[in-house]
Image (cartoon, rainbow, N blue to C red; front, side, top):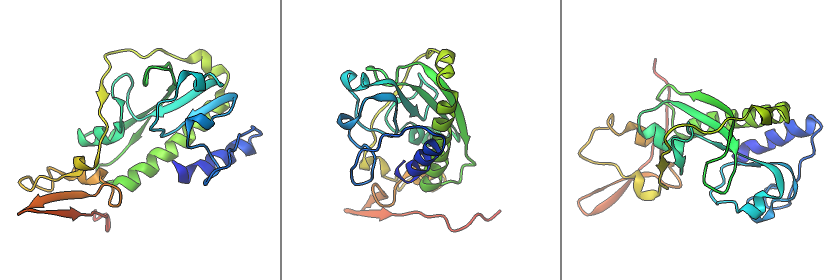
Length: 211
């Protein structure tokens, strides 16, 4: 989210809102312990659990999770959805609670993909929608609090992904594994395969859309 946060802050400042800036390498908070007291705290793409005593510093703590909660709680939800063959990715803005991904829902929107997008395109589309949803929430606040709804249905959880999840199966076709190629990160966790005692990295980028 880092490349898109400056845009979000600018929208809030232009709207007359007070935004707390904590001085660090990139001018916003990367550690929950640094969260100040305030009215609204947006917790975006945070890989750490925020403890109740820190959540108590703000009246509302908002998270956006890329699944149709309570389905798909946990780690890397949109990545798992793409791997499952989904191209309609839900974004759910909800209240953070001590239990993971369990709070009331305020907003929900979908980002629709065509199926050819690679990770950078997916990230950009989701980030733009997240910025829009955060701005929308602030514009509707505080009335939107009264419109919250509880999560309904059976919950499910996704596990944390790691570099080993980017391994390709040399006995399966590219078509069969294309969704995995869509979500690998060429720098941080590139696709790879093992063959004849060696490990090979395979990096992917889009050249052009043909039709």
